[in-house]
Length: 88
Image 1 (cartoon, rainbow, N blue to C red):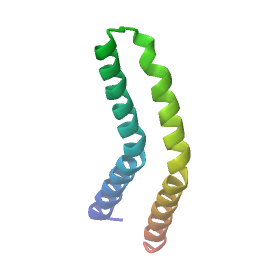
Image 2 (image 1 turned 135 degrees about the vertical axis):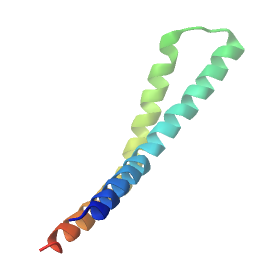
Image 3 (image 1 turned 180 degrees about the vertical axis):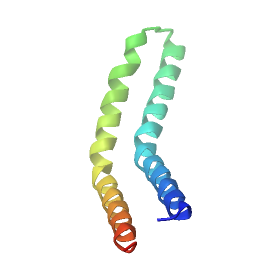
């Protein structure tokens, strides 16, 4: 395996990490913005109010997207194993 193949695998790994983490992080950010807007409109300044809705929303998105994440990870793993097997 030369440097270009190693860099290609590293690049693919970073894109896979972004693809897997993006849905959960985007939902957490969206729920956080909505709760912050609610707090600003109602003058409720409770710091712990943001945690429970964020965790619940992230949990549901994680459960919903878990099959896709597994499929992407499986495809990536097969690709890496295929590359390693063709080195011989």
